[in-house]
Image (cartoon, rainbow, N blue to C red; front, top):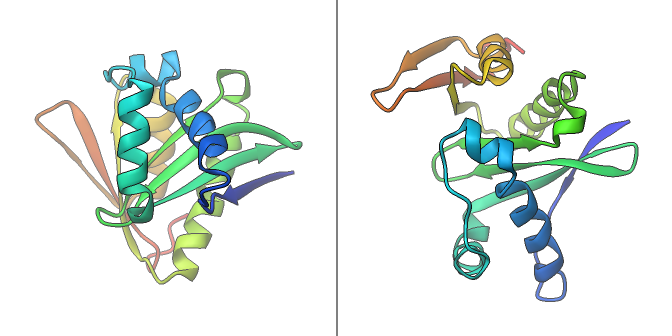
Length: 153
């Protein structure tokens, strides 16, 4: 039922996928919980054109609907995930992360880092389940360490 669709950018589909990414990146709850500002589309398009090769984007699909997005940074080995408000608290975020982790493990990426805020208790608890270690940072975020060789998930 739930699967990840990897985005393969081409000139012919760039605008289509950009709109999906921008929609989730500017989600009111996502911006509010993570203390980040909404992005300006023109600047965001420039950023995506410049950075899409160093990222892996996945659309989270559930019952043929787009319900979220995952943005994995290949340089920093970290990611962000946004799930549509109507699909939260159903266990779909955890399933999406398991699928992401399987993909990364198959690509021989073993260590990743996740950042979360304690006030986002659902994400914080989920990241705690998958991590073997965590560290509170000065900016208020907690850095979670995940190692697939330890196979905690």
